[in-house]
Length: 228
Ligand SMILES: *[C@@H]1O[C@H](CO)[C@@H](O)[C@H](O)[C@H]1NC(C)=O
Ligand SMILES: *[C@@H]1O[C@H](CO)[C@@H](O)[C@H](O)[C@H]1NC(C)=O
Ligand SMILES: *[C@@H]1O[C@H](CO)[C@@H](O)[C@H](O)[C@H]1NC(C)=O
Ligand SMILES: *[C@@H]1O[C@H](CO)[C@@H](O)[C@H](O)[C@H]1NC(C)=O
Image 1 (cartoon, helix red, strand yellow):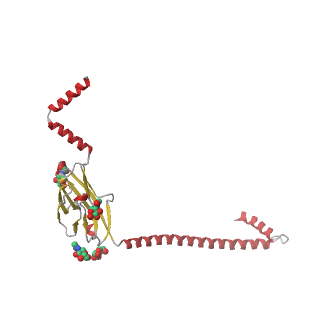
Image 2: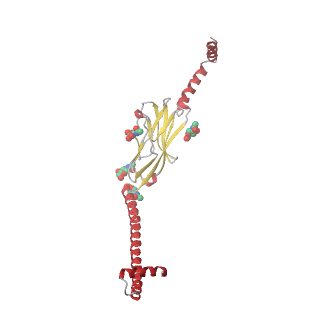
């Protein structure tokens, strides 16, 4: 009974403070549940490697758990040049888009929360950071963005070829060196054996004539070891 009275009095107090507080508490709770209200995403891959002269899809999607209204978005290059910008009036309504670069096409769609662009005829000068930026007036214009880094390369096959050449020459060089070492080793061993045989011959000729060759050889070896 007491607990119920306390909770009732608490409820009354809240009510007496007016509807405003209840609404703000509710909004805070909602925002707490979805901490990142608006999220811009370029996907899992943040670095794009493209061949000089080709085109690239620069993906970007948005997500918002409190919904969007007049969502402003843009794409900038190296934080200076605005490539394209637009406003999505509501969820599912296609945006009004302005494209400021002749090599850029807007290919997004509000049906898939997609604000992707395509950059055509890419040159080495296009390398750098591409930022997909979004601002939802619903959440006090907080800024959100995602970065995509573009790297431009020469023909991919040529890159592979240089790499292959480097690997081949390194491996070839190592194998060549090993072969050279082995040849040197056998030559040195051959010379050493020749020298040893010469020594043996001298020892045998000066040794006892009665003993067999094998025995005399082992004797000669025994004698030669302490000398060496
Ligand atoms: C890059 O591609 C363009 C067009 O295909 C070509 O004119 C240019 O020479 C290329 N640049 C390099 C450094 O290969
Ligand atoms: C891109 O290159 C193609 C052929 O290389 C050319 O026809 C086209 O006009 C170029 N587009 C732009 C926007 O420069
Ligand atoms: C966005 O739209 C483009 C063009 O229709 C498509 O190629 C791309 O896969 C889409 N991206 C996502 C994440 O849906
Ligand atoms: C969002 O960015 C714009 C321009 O980049 C800036 O003027 C504005 O102050 C930023 N807002 C917040 C809340 O950071």
